[in-house]
Each structure stands twice: as structure tokens, then as C-alpha cells.
Image (cartoon, rainbow, N blue to C red; front, side, top):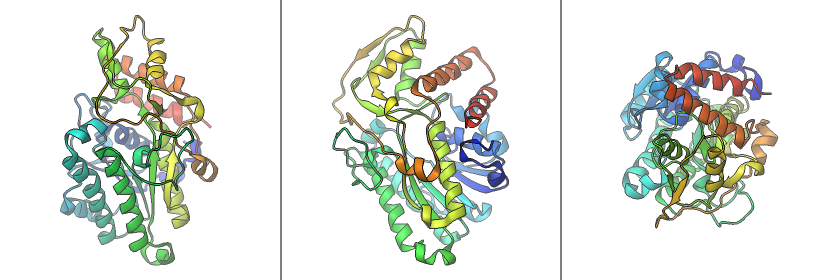
Length: 360
């Protein structure tokens, strides 16, 4: 487990607080942290889907599984004080664009106030060495231009979800400047960074209104999948790709302090930038007698083109994507078909995780 710039020697025994461990990306990250030997406390609501990767892969069996709401500052203060984490990885969020249109108040409350409460708990309790706050590639003021966004581009957000995550970036900047400045690092001891990743795929994502879950659910029922915006281009990657980046970043923050603070992009290369329609067409080539698609345009705004420049992560962390889009789709489909067969999904998930982690 020394591949990908990840050191089992470093992570073994580290006390880690992972928010959102019951979600899709959070479940994969919890499995990975336990494989690396970390002592993991998860803080999250119950899984948001039925079924869920968390339940199918029995993620909670070997970590400290704490259920709670990020909007409850008292609960966060308690878990931080009780577990004394050295590293905090913040993934908990309301992650769906269309759900944010339906419930903007709940989305801002969860994403903005939840992040604020976590930062305040860290500030009040102390002792955390490294904190990675996960936001999204959608924090940028998207101009629909063809070149990729760098970390120093302007923040924005047309829709409530994107805006709420841009607010989280501003919160991180403010707390870093006000309470955890680099000049006072010897006193407070915390290095804080944000991580911005693109659209992630992978086995175990059952969230509604996401492309791959919608495709697999429809085709499993022998029905065509409904697409809202087939020409939209997205930075597709397997969930393990940015998760590797988050781990590398957390380790760098822990070892080197605020020199590695700030914002970081984790996105795929140009070869894996393609439209929604093309992703579905590629998946159809691996699905015998795929029932096809139908298009029902939405009146809600969705970005047409969004690219990330991940040069900072590649050059300074040594991070890069390991699976092509074709491999990503293959592993996602294999996981789904294994689940449909009734296989042991913890074993399947760990097999895929180890296959990825062994790449050099």
C-alpha cells in the first residue's frame, strides 16, 4: 500500500475524523483509511439511499460509527473532543444539484452551516494537524470557456448547490486567515486546504439524478434512460481518483504544514473529458442489448462545459489519475453486476480498492 504516494507507515494508527462516511465517496474513503491502518471515526447522517455502499460493503463494522448532523454544533464539539482527531477529512454535504433547487434552504444549511460548525469545533477543541474540506469543481464562476479552471480563478455558483460550495471555500479562506494563519502555525498547529473534484463514478453510487445510477437502474429494468442534457461535457473520473488526492494532500499538510494549504483541483486529463451522451454510448457498448436513451430537456440551469486544471496536484503532490474513463466504466459496471448477482460486496469493493492502490 505504498503506491500512489500513500504511505501505510504514515497512516497506521492516525486518528482520523471523516465526515460523510455513510455516503458514496465517504464509504470508499472509510474502507481505504481502514486498509491503511488509520483509526477512523465517522460522523454522518444515516445513509441517504437504499441500498447503499455503506451497508452493502459493511463499512461500519471496523470504525467508530457516529451518527449526527453537522448543523448540531454541540454534537460536533463532542465528537472532536472525545476522539481528538489528528486529521479531519470533511466530505459530508447535500451533494445533488437538482435537490438543491428543490430545497435551497436545506442545502445551504447543511453545506455552509455544517462546514462552519466543523471549523468552529476544530478551532475550539484544538489538536487537529491537517484538515481537508472537500467542495466541488462547480465552485468556479463558470464562463463556459474551453480552457480548464485553475485554483486562483474567481469563485461563483449559478445554482444553489454550486453557490453553497463556493461559500464553503470562502469560509475556509476566512478561518485560515483569521484563526490559522501561516505566521502563527507554531501556536495553532493546523494546516487547512480545500479540494475540488469533478464528476465521480464508481460502484455503489445509488443516488437519484446521477448519470450512472440512472443508467443502470433504467437498463436493469429494460427501459431507456432519460437524459436531460446529453451534450454537457464533464470531467469524469472514478471516485478513487480524487480520494487518493485527498489522502495525499492530508499527509502533505500533516508533514509540511501551511506550505501546502489553500485550494487544490483533482480532475481527469483531457482524454477523459466527454459529453454525457458519449459516456452513455460507451457504457452501452458493454451492456448487451442496452435499451437506449430518451431526451427530456430540463428548464433548470446546468453547466454545459467545465474543465479543471490539476497541474498543482500533479506537480506538487505527484498525483495523477490511474484509470482511464473506459476502465472507470468497466469497474463501475463490474461492481454493479456483482451486486445484482448477490456477491459479497465488501469483498468486491476491497478487491477494486486494492487493484487501484497497487498501481504505481
